[in-house]
Image (cartoon, one colour):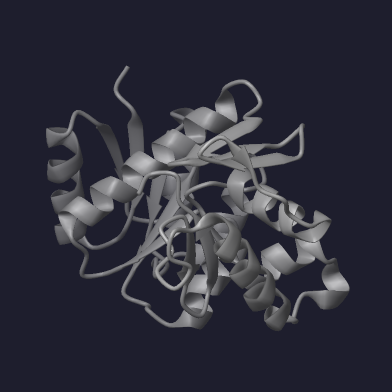
Length: 229
């Protein structure tokens, strides 16, 4: 079946553009102009991916994200003119999977949709216990990381950090979300921990730690473990 994309945006020109672009790529597209309308459409016809604007006439996009996350894990791509780091972090913390700023490039949007669909399929399939990214393999239950078939020795904290990023591969994870998961809520503001440990992991896994291909920084927001480079 054609993947179902739900677009929630009150700008008619954006609606038309997204419907045309996505339909041409064989997606089934539903469009809503208001948050409540989008929530109702999603309940009636569950989407595979949700594209959400933050500025809606009836409710804030952050609140829409929160309501979706009460009952669906469908990937949410925020598409907004708001480009501040604060808004990006807030959207991701409310449950969005990705964030794209208007005006946007068509190919970049399509790439984000493909990644979202891939992540959704992984979530719906059997438990995703082996993560592959180029020469890197992360065996979650075995607590083993290899590069080109050779085991890489990681500390317990390094493995916990990499495993969390790998289990959420291709998604942006905020500093706070990572710190809370790996170190606990008491250390959620200690971003210096992340810089140090990410640097150590890159030295062990990346060809060029200064130009990483897999463990990527999202400036001011967090990190993303990329499996499609």
